[in-house]
Image (cartoon, rainbow, N blue to C red; front, top):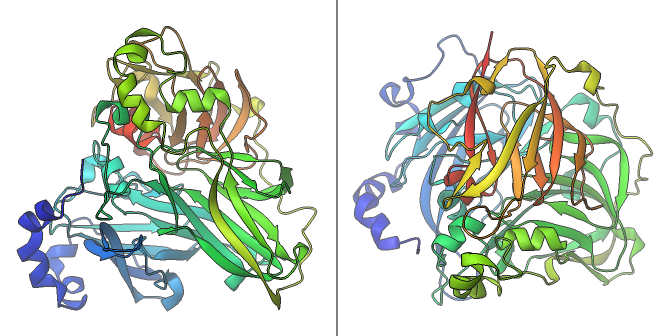
Length: 524
């Protein structure tokens, strides 16, 4: 499937042509446009305009690439709330502070319904980007919420059901960084030594245009994999660094690819944070598995390298269970999937599977950066244990692929549907168990990798079982957790402070679009 420029022009050319030459002001001052879901008593500290548009950007040498992108402007509040310096297709980086009240006026200038999810943030259900709230071409949605999260690396992306994968693949994504007083008091790299790295993989045609799901059903079932790695929207990413300490905030914003991150010289990755912010103390890891939706913060001290030395952040071959799961468990070629559809799989095997590849290159310069010592301790974390759980019996969710769709407890997504075992009481602390069970072969039940994401909460990983791999980074607060085929994991979370309808789903975006997503409702 091509992201078709002509189709876009047919639907929106006249509208966009009429709007392109205007400033933001006509939209911002329109009460008809912004009045629908605003809270009259809400007084924002920061007021932002954000739009989704079609653009052309240079990614590869040669013709520019058609993409979809978020653009924004700060209306009220500190001008550095939005970092607009990135000229790639990625949206502006939000820099918010805990306790700020934020209004975001979103305008959709794309030919499809869309809505924005603020991945990892604790927000009211009407602000969370549920697909029932999508807006069409020329329509708007106003987000209003207080930043309740601790400091950390979060992100935002579209969340319409059935089209999330396509829209994110087309370019709709951006970084959202939260800071707080506790974090700013720590001796961590800041400014130019605090870098966000958004990792994605893409396929391009001979004219540098994005190609989405050329494998049809096989790409839909396995998830979309590309053969070019992009960092912050750029291919063959590299950067010059000072001989000093850096904080690298890494976001896996790929549709389906799991990365096994490592330094090419074998030095350990020094992990200082995960999805929900800093962990208690640095962890030294040989490599780390990072699945779609997950974030990782690492401390990189480039003063350890000689001037002009180069070091690469790489992805190593995945463990057997993960690489098989990303190809539908077809390594043995058994059953109908192994025999009748292997042709489709062969085309996928060139997409960087079972090989080491470069994510980004760093070249060390002669300038000496800030001399910072890696702290022995970072931050105390709230203790939450199995003994704190209010549910006497663990909620169990079985993940499976059957009948060409993703299932959770045998169910597929329905826009408003909530089962009795998907109702949670406000303030409850609960243990949820996800089981990526493997039973049978062929079309009926294919082993797959599933990164599970729960909206509205940050959770702690209590334990996992099954295949196992020492590349997991389960420390700290999380909102997304990876399960290889045959694995199970238990997490514990406190469901507060909001009631309402939220989502939990596989963050392999094609799986979620295909039905592996469900609602849960928080009630009084």
